[in-house]
Image (tube, rainbow, N blue to C red; front, side, top):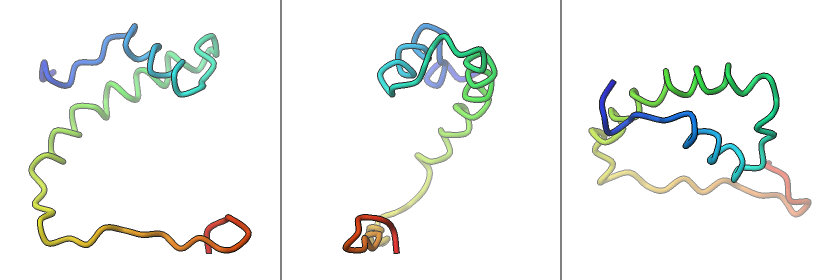
Length: 67
């Protein structure tokens, strides 16, 4: 695995905790395994040329939900 995209279990649990997830949930191990599989693919995002792309601005209704 690319060293730049290595994710330790401690780092994962800390991010999960900061995100408000229950780190004692039995599914954390499954989620960690999934995230470790996805993380290396994120390096391809750096290759995208978004110079001419317009930012996405979602519409929000008066009620606060998406249109």
